[in-house]
Amino acid sequence: MPEISIVIPIHNEEKYLLNSITGLCVELGKLNVTNYEIVLCENGSTDKTREIGEELVGENNFIRMIITGKADYGAALKECMLNAKGNYIIQYDLDYWDVSFLRKTVLLMREFEYDVIIGSKNMLLSNDERHLPRRIISQGFRLFLFFFFRLKVSDTHGVKAFRNDDRLRHLINETKFSRHIFDTELVLRCQKRGLNIIELPMSIIEERPSTTKSIIKRVPEAITDLIKLWLELKNRRGVEKKRTDG
Image (cartoon, rainbow, N blue to C red; front, side):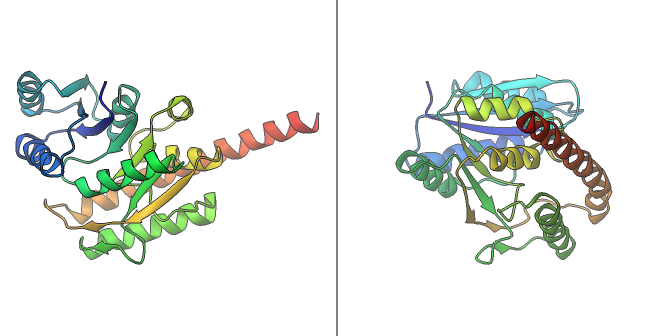
């Protein structure tokens, strides 16, 4: 059984998949990380992503691929995490991974009782070199989560590490939303259940072109889902309070 499960959703990544996974494996080898698996979830790709993924699986016994028919980042990430076999789950995006983060977080979770470790691009010590509109949106998202949910960490997107135990799997199965906010909802539920969470500063450089238009288009969808989540959690708190009072 692997000690570490690296989970990565993939969608229309034929230009990047082979080089990115090869580069990740090379960097893992340089830092003597050996006991790991990589779990990919191909979700609704319309290019050759699936074929390239199948080649990687055929050539490497530590790579597995799950296939879903619908393009949905959150649902794909959920499937990856539920299928992870390692004691620790490291969440990466194909173009956003950091092996030093993996080394630090596994050590912290081994030696201390941390359950969730977030690589934050919004901390003061972080270095975020993405385009200005993306940085502004990230900060706005952070403030929204603080005021509506009292989120104690500064980020919920990007790289994260989780202790893979029964509590985490229960919380993953409790999540209601996918698409853009699955990992945000999961972090919120982890905080609500009292899991031990810390965050580390990250350095981020944009390695592929992204359009401001596509990012802005996702914002209303994410905010709508977050409002639905806020109402769902509020109603749940009301029901739990009635049970306690009764």
